[in-house]
Amino acid sequence: MRADLHMHTFYSDGAHSPKEVVAMGKAAGLGAMAVTDHDTMGACGAFFEEAKKAGILPLKGVEISAYEGEGRVHVLGYGCAENEAYVAYFEEKFKKSEARIQKMIALSNEMYSLDITYEEFCESRKNLREPYHAAQLAKLVSARLQRYIWDVFAEAFAFGMPAHVPDWGPTPEGAVSLIHACGGRAVLAHPGRIGLLTSVEYREMRTTGDSARREFLQRENLLRRQALVDRLAPLLDGIEAIYAKHTPEQREFYRTYALNHGLAFTGGSDFHSEEDPPVGCMPFDLSEELYDFLSER
Image (cartoon, rainbow, N blue to C red):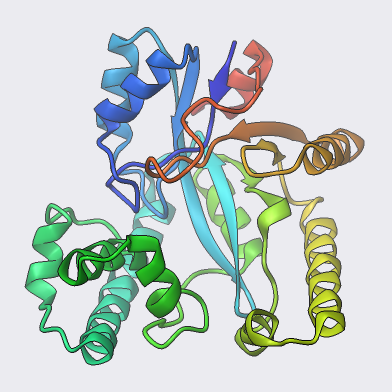
């Protein structure tokens, strides 16, 4: 059956409700879906209810934000239980994200001469008790400036920019261990998009006029990325090979890599909003065997 196993709602940094995301999946002809909000399973109850109404098989999902040095590595968890391990992680993530966003509000106010308050920010995100995200603040700031959200995000909040504050999270191995402690299956998200340069290297690659230096940094990131994938492979249950923004060559490479290492491979759009590839846009079919493997036990 056609499936999309990677998408987000406004419970993290998506633009839509679980009901709206399910409607998009229904319109795309999907037979199975998973909502994988960042660091929370808060949307899963509403998502399951709407998916069942729509005749779509739901999978319980979450996307854990992990860190390799300064680089962010996402690990998808499927079939996780909201047990003590999950609750302990969620509470710590919420607390650390609250402190982080308050610093980012102050930095963006200074950068743009604004007066956004923490209370105003909370109201803008529907006062959900879920971890805070930079994209949510970028949405509020861009509305005040009457500018395009992703221009503001890239200018102020992206990695290495003036209003960026480093996030808190486990190591990639820690994220896999957390997912397994919750009884879930750990799948490395969009491996072809992982960036492992330092903030200094990243800024240099964006600003240098030296093409040879840019090419060196790009090659260095590829080497670091593959070393990470090789290191994690024995711990993982799967790899997200059929990712919407992977090139055809990357899809085939990671699909073959997964099969050669005895891992499942999954597919997802990583839909957040209409700025992204649409729900169900990737050619991914979910077998009954894989559905059972990824389901909550």
